Length: 171
Image (cartoon, rainbow, N blue to C red):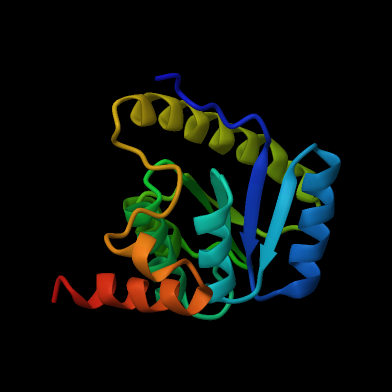
């Protein structure tokens, strides 16, 4: 079986700052990325389940804990995806926590978004390599792989319920 290779440079931006995410999407589009934007959890989870996105740009604007929960979710259900955290300020503790949970990098938002491109490119390269290596061994599903998904579908509401179950189940 041939290993599928994502040929399109795709990223999803999950950030509550609409003007920032719009501008970053334009910069990434100019850098030949196909960009998806999400302003809420159901939307980002739907995009992650339906598209072969290998880079998640995750804003940490409001709640550090919510962003870290989203990072955990992404790393559990999409182990090949690389997550880049975007924050409005340089917060050491948040960066430390995010990196410990598997974030690829932690960037402070700036007006010069072109500075982000090399980091996002490296994240994509790493994710693509992981995808090829792990998919060939059967260890990395290119789409959401939650037991029972094929029976109940992939609507945003179902994805939220599955994520909640995954969060509560270990406790």
